[in-house]
Amino acid sequence: MKFSTLALALGCVPVVVLGHAAPHLDAKQAAEWTCVLPHVATPADAVQADVRLHVHGLASNTTEGQQVVGVDATSLTSLVDAKTEDILIAFYAPWCPHCRNFVMFDDNENPEKALVEILNQEIILEKGPKVVKFDVTKSEVPAQFTVRGIPTVYLSLKSGAAVQYEANPHDLVGLKAWALGGHAMQVLAVKNSTALARGHLRK
Image 1 (tube, rainbow, N blue to C red):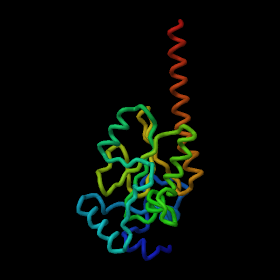
Image 2: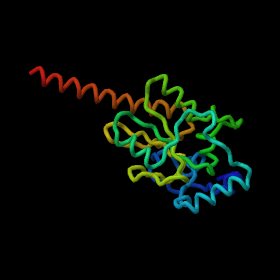
Image 3: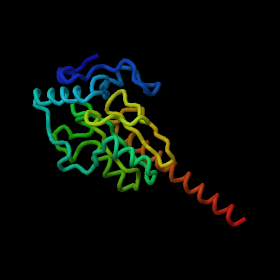
C-alpha cells in the first residue's frame, strides 16, 4: 500500500478497520480517501496538528470565498434538534490530506472549487439538504455521530435519523445521489404522513 510522504508527515495513516465501512470496501480502498482519527481528540492534539500544518507550509484560510457554513458541537446540535431541515455534515480536519482536497480547496488551491462547495451548489439547485462542515480539531463531535475516520459524511434527517455515507466521498456524483435520495425519502415520508392525517380528519 503506497502513501505519500505528505500523508505520513501529517499523521494520515492506513485504515485497517473503518468503523462503518461498506462491506465491499477493503482497507486499501478506504485508506485511499480516509485518515484514521485517534489523535485529535483533545485540544492539545489539535494544537499539535495545527503546528504540523505550519511546519509543512500547509496552513491556510479555509473559509474565504466558501459558502458552506462551518459548525461546532453547539451549533450542529441546535440544527439537528430543531428538526426543521435535513442536514448533510462533512466532518474533517485541516491536517488530513484527503480532507483538504474534499473540504478546503481543489488541486489548484481554489477554496471555491472544493468538492463540498461544488456539492453544496448543486444540492441547492435541487432543493436538497443543508450542507455544513465540522472541523473535528476545534470541537467535540456530538455523541449521535460516530467519526473514526475523516472525511466522514453524515445525513441528519428531520425524522431524527442520522445516516453515514459509506462510500468514497470524493465521488461527487455518488455522494450527491445519496444525499438527494435520502432527502427525497424524507420528503416523501412527510407527504405521506400529512396525507394520511388529512384522510383521518375527513373521516
